[in-house]
Figure (cartoon, rainbow, N blue to C red):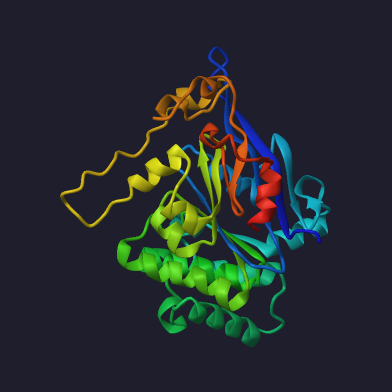
Length: 336
């Protein structure tokens, strides 16, 4: 059976610096992801800033091309799609971005983005049908059309603007929505509302979600599976609940340990800060070796493969070398 979306061993390398200090930044290396059409899913892509999350999202959306590997939609490589195939892909794979304000043209009312989608993909034959579709989409995400339409972006709250973007995506009846940090720029009171809107797309409409986040709390609340990235490499992947509750990779343990708890007596671990020098330094071993409390000699000389530690989990760490090795493509299909 052909997967709806498949990322096969995708890598992305960028050239950074000037002519004198030109370096190669490996933003993503050998990442695989599978989304089945018959089984809608919510997959979280998590990690600190600089881990490769947004690079993977841009590859999935076809905004950039992989330096190696493939991104396929319904078995077709995005790089070789025909114009008509690309049009179908753009309708069926939608995006919700971190800052909704940047998506809007401040000179147009908020319904302008909704109207453009309807016109571009010929979703309505009459004005009455167009208005009905817009009203229905807004109501689905918890907005009242009479209080939303006719306003300019600055007249809506951040949460309202983000939900209008969810409604715009819903208009197109997509198969997949890539949500890139959709709640990072709204306050806590609106976070739950937006997450509820996203969950509704999955439960009520069978839309698969790829949820890009640095927030493991919301990843746990929303997702069925999770891919943990560190400096572009997959550290741990599989069932979200198992990984958050009992992390196996030292990096995942550090991230889970840094989640704030409602206790002022507990001192939280400081989040990782990754410099550009670290990201371009290369090296032949595990990229987490210099920070890892469990580092051994082999960690500095060879990149660890993925080891299948459970039916729906794999960890790239030599602590688990007694387990069978598995390719990233194989494990991505097993938890899809």
